Amino acid sequence: MEKSPLVTASTLVVCLILSLLSSISNAATHGGGTHNITSILAKNPDFSTFNHYLSATHLADEVNRRRTITVLAVDNAGMSDLLSKHFNIYTLKNVLSLHILADYFGAKKLHQISNRTTLVSSLFQATGAAAGTSGYVNITDIRGGKVGFGAEDNDGLNSYYVKSVFEIPYVISVLQISHPLSSPDAEAPTSGPGLVNLTIFMAKQGCQGFADLLRPSKALEVFEHNVAGGLTVFCPTDDAVTSFLPKYKNLTEPQKESLLLYHGVPEYETLQMLRSHNGLMNTLATEGANKFDFNVKSKGEDVMLSTKVVTSTIVGTLIDQDPVVVYKIDKVLLPHELFKAAPVLAPAESPEPAKKKKKAASSANSPDSADSPDSVSDDQKAADDNGSNGLNNGFRFITLLVTLVMAFLVL
Image (tube, rainbow, N blue to C red; front, side):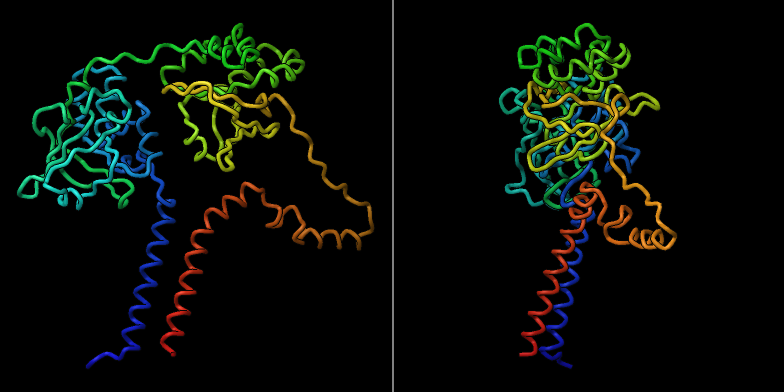
């Protein structure tokens, strides 16, 4: 029996709605395109070694901040072969960066390569450390469904496609390959970055005051010890330090050390990473029950650090040389463990008769009450808005689409 135009149109509408709902659901699930390579690989123990060294070399952060990326993952057996060469961490970073391609290649796209072969830039090429085009990776679709991979400066293909591990189309693809890619250039001995003399550098870049506080303190040794593993320093301007000195002089020596350590984070955090952080961040002063953390907040391009006592804004970058980055901030960070926040004045309870108290209790349930939804912090409101706006807009679009289609069918 032939279907009526109305039934056919209705079926199309239902399919379209389901498709849109699926797209919106996927966008919500993947955070609008964000991804975390560490979490992705953690679901498969076979890649635990590869996952560990992506974090140790800070390449995981680079993968996470990019929006079009392919990771060629190697299992634990393959990583054992690579580690048996005893590369230092900086050479190992070059080799692993060759396994991160600056383009999207899902399992399907591997078999849709024009002329069956292509050269793709890797992060090793993007860093500028590669000589010539040695940082490019050759991908060849071999007949019989086999796909091979090889570094441009290495003759032939030395690794092959095994399976797809994870894919978000045109955003990130994680593919398992049979062996680590071999590249003479990437495997060449590499020394680490020269030790940054933090105090001399700060003094030359407008942070003389903070450098003067840091030099005689035990905190300086902690800063220097963390340089190799990753360090982010928030350096207050000279004006900020000058106005803070009277309070600083009243602190005990352990308190002074804690305050200085509070301006360091034991990780390399780029501005982009800080903008996407939005939450609590531990510092060099964090130890056991001593939280000494602060909140990272972003508003547009601005990044602010809130300690519950003061909010400071990043006003410049002094140096950004992985694994060290030093930012200039407009206020000294005051941890609430050492400084009291400004008291919030609460309305005193009125010694009214019982009838009046009942009215007051009733008003406590009004929208102006501290426990009402309207009293939720601005940060929480922003978080809720960001989480719901995309879905709300999607459902509004569906409602409008259904209305238009139904009106068309009626006509």
